[in-house]
Length: 379
Image: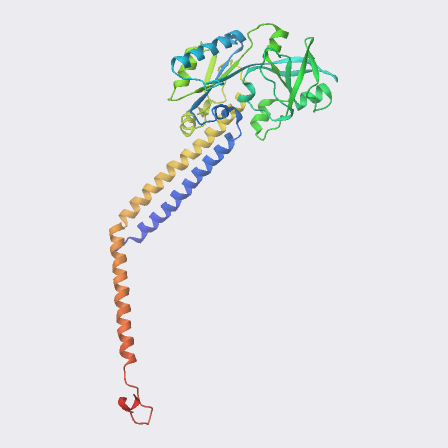
């Protein structure tokens, strides 16, 4: 088999480059997985549907003018319940078929034994701590209970500012003349720069929404509503959600976070990369969502590089195949050439064996100046 050596060399180099670009694509995927691996807001469905059922994590964000009241959110909950029942989605025994939470993000003056301070406040309801499992240093999250509403959770900065200590679970503070009990203290540290930037420098507090409503009165200040719903077929959960919630696309944004960072979603989001720095809405995003938007940008940049590497890898693979074909290389030719080499090696070995045998039976030569000794006498 005659081969074009230049074609073979080009094919080999192209093959090596193909593997190299494929490795770079894998590194990009590994980097993207590392970026989103610690995003707790994406994993609430896994925590709720522990049996592995498919689910969708849906978040609704509004601007201040379209903020919701607690009664509106509870009406949405009843509508979703009805939609699931009509779709024959049954709740497990002593449980619920779905989870939800909501929160208002604001600031308020809080008085503790040490001082009074302005605290960044999230008034939360529903399964908030399932959606956002904060790292508790002391104590535990409060339950969303109307019978025991006067409860709060502080981050360590707020605890230190108000009490001069961190381990203050069980102690009380005051908001608007109402006394509330601290049930737990959470850490504010996270390893992602995006989280720290979105979280901000102000001390933070999480208050039971029933207590917040008792202090401030009924008001429309809920700007985020989240739900984890069963999703047996694609778009089932989103359709249930949109049928239950009155969505104004001019003042509200709905996102499905469960598949937000899938390969297809990241690929589709690349076209938005040049415009991600623009803000053309007045939607109020909580710090959880702001962290995710930073990850949107980073993973989109990563996806651009991955796409380039994937395209170059395929191009090199194609070039390697063409070069291999032009060089005259074929699999059948390789097999035939290999078989010929085996036959040739076997023939040479057989010939060498015959020669060796003949040499071993040849009569011994007489010594110089001596006489030849007959073979029979030697025997």
